[in-house]
Length: 515
Image (cartoon, rainbow, N blue to C red; front, side):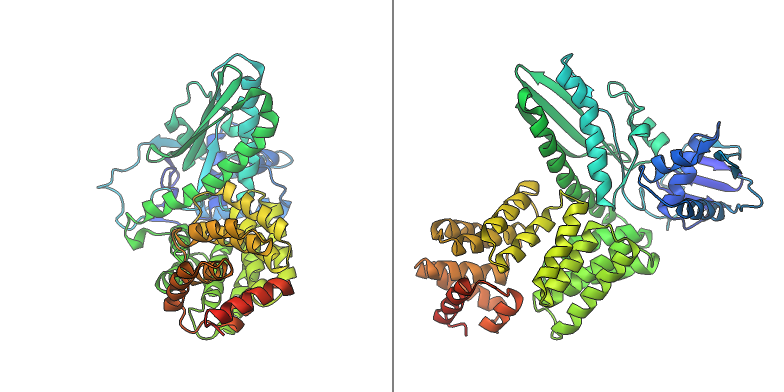
């Protein structure tokens, strides 16, 4: 749907603003602010309503709201003096005064060839009230309580713009029309669901739809005893947030690949960069770096793109992809710091800083940054995985194992799943359960993406377990990828504080011919 007023056209689907036919760069917050004011142009909108709708109710300073209004006016060719579109009603709020007409968007043939992609900008989602298919109290209460908890949890992700429930709950779950949600809330994704009683059990069914394409992106169902509703609610929220955190970027990246590069925006490059970074090889890491740099060229204030750059430089050092390891570690820390300067409450940026300071030799500081990231997003699977890794280094094997199990339960298809299994293997070796460790080793080396570090740890486990054939197979494969492997390099990357485990690992490496 396009909104036409003055010399401006806003395309709610493509999230584009044009003046006199020329595309105008606009920040996502400013776009959302204009769209909300237009939607409610028949009345004055209070400052608190704007905060609830655009910032999802998070506390912001008055100066931040004023800056967003100034940015919106500037994008429209308006000003605080002219106020031809956005008028300040002193002591009350704001009102959109320009006359607005709605029209269908241009067809693909009429569209500008270099227009940004459909759904450009930060991904956005509306979580609707769930449909209660029973008349019992549990189903009715859960139909509103669960979406409200999901809205709160999803808003912690920071990269996802979440519509406040005051807006998304206005759509009746039994009869909502996706196009109406798109027109009124200007979102890229819709999360809906239903609650169905099954005797003494309840079934919660969830669907994530791409609002623009009408495509089912993800779906799942949770069935549990109705008596366990309080305990299960948190599990459903955690599992759903974790799955959406993986599913939406994957879908965004897949849709971006269908376009020409001239149509990419900063978020397009970010999603593609993250996809490349998780392939864990030199060529992919270089491609990821190029995407993150392109994102920063388009938006120098894009904090997550700085965190992405930290990710690739850390990976260059961790996987020894480049010669100057110290330089890459320095850049990884510097880029994470820039990301945190832009948004100190972004869990991914805290995660990247934690990894950078750990690999620089300060495991305690790394844990502090990871714990901070997890306090910001308690459903961050990779945060729990990396926390488990550092706890293993500190000799806290039981807690490391528990943190790793948490990561696995949150993200069973995670690109770092082989690393989670490696964490588990190391903890099991240290705790003396070599049978369990061998099972974890087998699964780790056969998981997608496993490279020389999991193979080395698997070879150590096999050597300690007396499994000579598997030790030789895994050691030889590791050395084919890392021919100059050494005990010194292993302990530089994994500084084990437990002297007993360190001696075991060192002796095993020596017996395998790795000095």
